[in-house]
Amino acid sequence: MTILKELTGELIGMFVAEKWLTVAVLTLIAVTGSLLDFAGLDQLAAGAILLFGSLLLLLASVCYAAKARTP
Image (tube, rainbow, N blue to C red):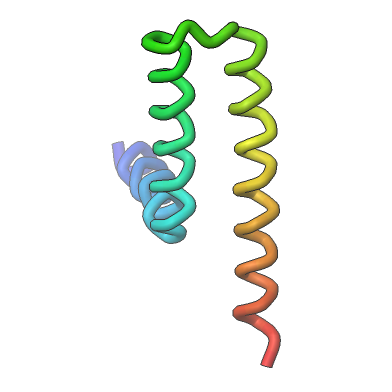
């Protein structure tokens, strides 16, 4: 049972450590889902938005972390 508690704590810690990244990914998903449902966006286009948006957010996160570590 303690392994599950530790695992849960680690997973939550991963998402809370980079708060802006978590919020950005959730916003990307929400906006894409809204466009898909309400604006009639094609599923392939929605998938492309999620793919390239996630890659862009990952790149921004890596650049931010690299800039924060340089003196």
